[in-house]
Length: 415
Image 1 (tube, helix red, strand yellow):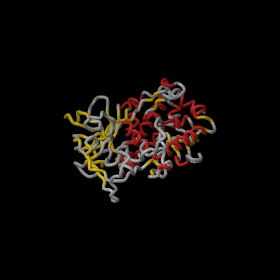
Image 2 (tube, one colour):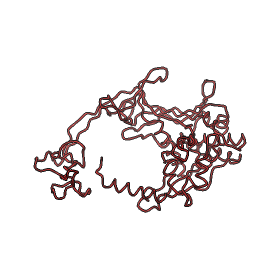
Image 3 (cartoon, helix red, strand yellow):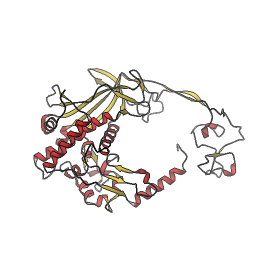
């Protein structure tokens, strides 16, 4: 199998193909037939389970599938894979960020990049931060981003090209719902095939063997959250009715006479049939990079050659997301670790519906491809920003964080 080259990618982006596609077969880490746990969703109380299950046509047959990782979640994972390559110095492209390390009381946040902010460069984290002492939206860079459109994406390409890959809607900017909307060109999801819903059991044996409290030995919430609970009514937290609050720092169930309220005591064995995991024949990740979507991007004032080079550079970021995502592993959540059954490959999907051309791609070749594509764009007159776009949080954002943390610190866990 040939390796994807800059020539392959350029020809595909310029019109030789409609999309690049990666289809990966995966199995649970504990082997075929192992149980995995999909994400859960809010459902009606009497629903059979909390998973996104649907019938799909797969390989010529109707299959019961379960969603293991959504399009939005996959985009986040792809962004983190690119971030890992950027931080390692292997992938070079602009990554604006907000630096909290010098902000008193919130320095633990470190820096939050455009690849981590939920709404990318249009996120409120950037909106409420300063670039060279000026609110981001009022800075030259911020104004350029605000004015960017699919019909003139030059400045977004310059400062945050990943937003052109994963999509961005500036719905909270000065133009509200009329703010620029860039559709996502990269779409990926992971589903489990031939899904069979399972059951999960749980229980706990308390080594202290604390069982029940006498009716007159009530435990109360302590007025000091660090103490959690107390038997002394004088140290108790007072409720709205002016009476001591029965202990409820722990489990939301039970009465004041139950130690489970303060996380002591046994938990009776139970069966969870709504979120008990699934068994599948295999998991399948399908990632599609729409070259048609990239071709709709325009770069005003640039030559046709420069526009093609810019689109190719964004496509190279998508290829790197697939290659680096493979190496980042597929540990989706607790008890949902999936193992790829083969090395990543790409299919170049043509317009005629014929058999796609398959090419191989790896971490090193993806990094080289991105380097070549960005250099070609620069030579054509459309370059990425080489200076760091480093913001600092505005004082009001730091104060908002402080106030929120103060309230959270006083609230019982689980409330």
